[in-house]
Length: 178
Image 1 (spheres, rainbow, N blue to C red):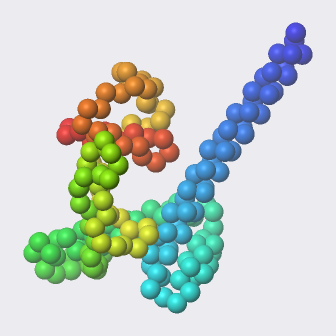
Image 2 (image 1 turned 90 degrees about the vertical axis):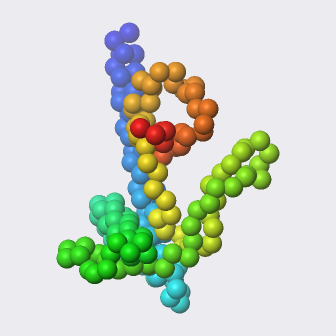
Image 3 (image 1 turned 45 degrees about the horizontal axis):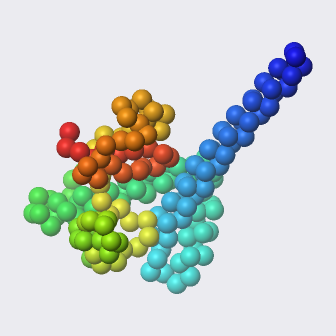
């Protein structure tokens, strides 16, 4: 019995390590895919853009990829905000220490009836944008996967207005007005 108990503990510990590695592997894959999309967005108009995006993404070490993704998204958000502020007449000159470079916004989002019977309205892309572009911000409360089981009624959550959305790594975004 004692041998069986040791064996079971060993199997359980090994299984936990495998699951942890799978979780980390999925995060690495997702980070690399996002890095590729964001990098391609920067070079999409150049000749042989796919090869250039792959080359640039591969040149970034595994440990630095997540930071690089964050930096690329942050830069894009700064440019988006500068563009919106300029178009609204709120930004007339450069602000020291910030990226006030603007971008051409020839795309957007629109709400319209879905072609899926019974689905109601949905959010659709209007125009075209390069892969990896920030197209919207989703306000709301974020519940991480480890906290979801503590929500009343989970896993059957009442969502009559369809305001819940799945986020990265199993999180849930509740975009009801706070």
